[in-house]
Image (cartoon, rainbow over all chains, first blue to last red; front, side, top):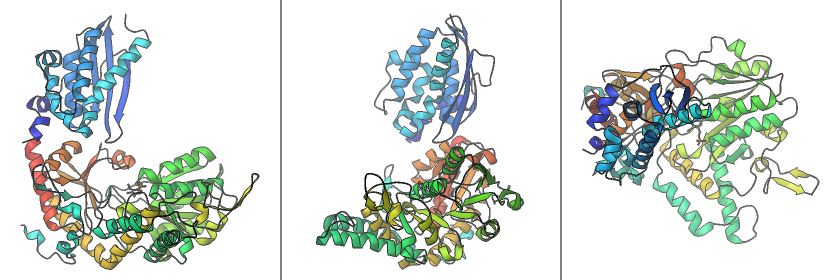
Length: 151
Length: 422
Ligand SMILES: Cc1ncc(COP(=O)(O)O)c(C=O)c1O
C-alpha cells in the first residue's frame, strides 16, 4: 500500500517513542506554527562552543511532525554546528524532492533515520509538517548565534 | 449495512442528483471512487452551472453597464438577471439590496469598512463596542479586530458552551448601549451549530445595534429569508452553494446602503467624477467598484436556479437525515469524540471530531488513501479549537449529493485509521 511509503516503521517508532521530548535549559527558544493545520512546536537549542549540547522541544502535531522532531534530536545532538547544517541541507533537499529523489548511500549516511521521510516528500501538504522542527532549529540556532551564545 | 440505516426518511434521489455532478464520478488512488465529504469547504458544481459559465463566455462575453452593442446588453442582462435570482432566493425586498462581492470574506470586510468610515449614528469609534462570537470563521473575526484596532472600539464576544452552543447567559452584558454592531454566524462551519438568531437580534434591537449575519454555511443548506431573519446585513459565498468561486453576496437593508459610505472606489460605482470630487451611483453599484465577476455572478444565478429546482426545504431534510445517520454511526466508533452538538437538533451538516489521540492529519491521510476526502485542521476557526483544548479536528460535511453509503465509507475508513495507528 502507498501509505506505507509515508508512514515508514521508523517514523511510527519515533512518533510513539520520541527522543529528547520536553523542554530543557537552552540558549535560545523559538515557537513555530504551521498555520494551515495548527501544528506547533516550541524548541530550544543549547550550544557548548560549536557543539550542539541539546535540542529540546515540546509541541503538538501529527505523526510526521512529531517523528521529525524526534529524529532531529537524535541526529543533531552532539554534532558540530557545521556538520548539523550539512544534515539540515540534505534533509531540506530530500523533502523538496517531490518524491523524485532516491536517497543514495552517501545521503543515507548523512541522514540516517531521516531518510525514512523520503516518502513524505510526495505529499505537498505534509512536507511542511516534516520541516516544522527543522525550520525551528535553524531559527533557534540563528537566534543563539546572534545573541553570541556560541563561540 | 447496519440497522441504523433503516428508517431513514426525507432523503433526496441522490442517484439522479449525482449524475449532475461530473466530479463525483472521479476515482483516485487506483480506482477508488471519491467520497467527497468536504462540502463545507467548497461544494461541487453541477453541469448546469458549468454550462452557464461556458455559455456566457462562448456567446455573451462583454463588459457590463457600458456597451451599446448587442452582446454587451446581453452580458448586462445576464449579470443583472443573476442579481434578481439571488434577491428572490433570499426573499430580499429589493434587488438593489444585493451587492456582489468576490466571497463572504469580502462581504464581511465591506460591512466593517462601511461602519468604520460612516458618520453618526452608525460610526464605530473609540467609545463604541463591536460584538462577535468565539465560534466564528476567521473571516468574521479578523475584519472586526482590524476595525477595533483602527478605531479604538472595543471587541467583545460570546463564548461557547461545552456542548457546542453559544453561551448567551450574559447577553445583556455583552450587547450593551455602546454596541454598534453584532456580527455572528448563522451556522458554524466547525461545530455545525445553528445559532438562535431571534434572541440575539431582539437584544441588538433593544440597544439600537446593527446586526450582521454570516450565512456562508446557511445559504447552501436551508431556506434563507432575509426578511424573516430581521438582520441588517447578511453575507454568504457562492462556491459553497454549488456556484463558482470568485462570487459572494452582501445583502443589506436599503436605507443603510443609501446612508453608508462606499469602501472601494473605481469605475462603475460613480455618478460623476471631477478631479476634485465624485458623487456615487446608488446601491448596489456604489459598492461594486470596477469590472465585477460577471461570469461568476451568472454562474451563481445558475446555482440558485439549480438549488431552487430541487427545493431548499428538501435539501435541508435530506441533510438532516444524513446528519442524524452520520452522528449515530460516528458515535459507534471507539474513542471518537464529537466536537459540537451530538444530535441533529439545530444543527447543520458539518461534523467535527477527534479520534483518540490520533492527529487529524494522520486521520485525513489514511482516509484519503481510501478515497474519502475530509478536511483536517482548525477550519479557520482556531478559537474553537483553543476553547476545547484540541489542536485540530477532522471534519466531515455533507450536502445534497451525499449518501448514507458515503457515511458508511467514512466509518469503515475510520476503523482502518484506528488499526493503522493502533
Ligand atoms: C462560516 C463561514 N464564514 C465565512 C467563510 C468564508 O468564505 P470565503 O472563503 O468564500 O470568503 C466560510 C468558508 O470558508 C465559512 O464557513
